[in-house]
Length: 396
Image 1 (tube, one colour):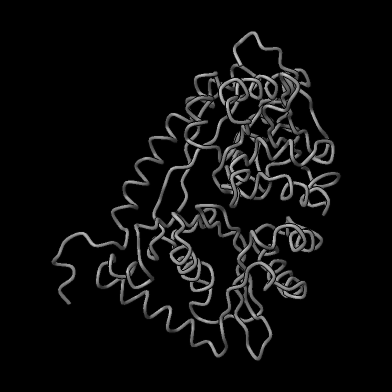
Image 2: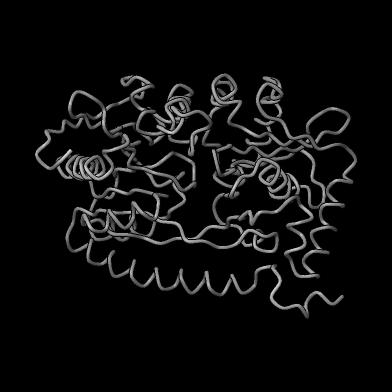
């Protein structure tokens, strides 16, 4: 495990080229002791579902180029890596970088993206077997940079990595970038009323009013996981997802087949919240369940009812997290409206390598200024959060 250990790096064009046990020994070694993976998105079954459903691969602009590092006769580290022909589905935006580079006569695409496609959720990107963290990460960084450089690619981007990885990557010569999301933190609440008690009086009343209005939409709300999620539920959710995808991205990122594959291999890792009228789903929100974090991912509807979006996406997620002792709910990218509902701004991280030295210097200057702006934005938004500040606020 020292610097003299020979390490072999392999590039895979599909997850089918590596055994699930070898990949997951690096991605989620904690499951060997029982329980869920910390991060469901980097598991072999999730990434394979993306490939087998053709949500990534030929014609999508996401070409798998996964890295595998081997030493001492075993897989010691892996990384989900893709050659990208565009910047869609990433949520760490570099469109301005691409435009500037191409205006200067360069070719920005293809680039390399170390990420979970379409998933703005923080997690490890340099997936290492226990005992190989530093050596494995160094091998993956060197392998990814070498792959980009040798193939004349403009850049490498590692998005939604952990803060620890961002710090380590910066020491290895990568550029660190700060962004911002909204997360709900469980401060040991016994139930939803316990959470409400931590809010200012006015915000508490607003949330109670929203929940009452949403739950009075004229039907029932059900939260399903495991075998309670039935294959036919995905027919309804696909319609919801298509509607949202068409409005937000122009077209859905995931194919219909993805949800069938997820039903087969990941139904225990999903929480599907549905609003039913006369037994028929009219709105839904899909979450993925980690060991300590609930990840809100997709929402859609065929009927619009006041506050139903807030109930299905945010309040039901809080209910589930409290009931299952989870530490946090990550509600995905963007959304200032989350702030008033107890989801507070936090910093997220990414790492970047740019092949052209002059362009890299310009990016580095931009990232320095951007980080200061993100820090200031988080400080300002935190001040507008819904939580109590003084006892005077509790005097109705």
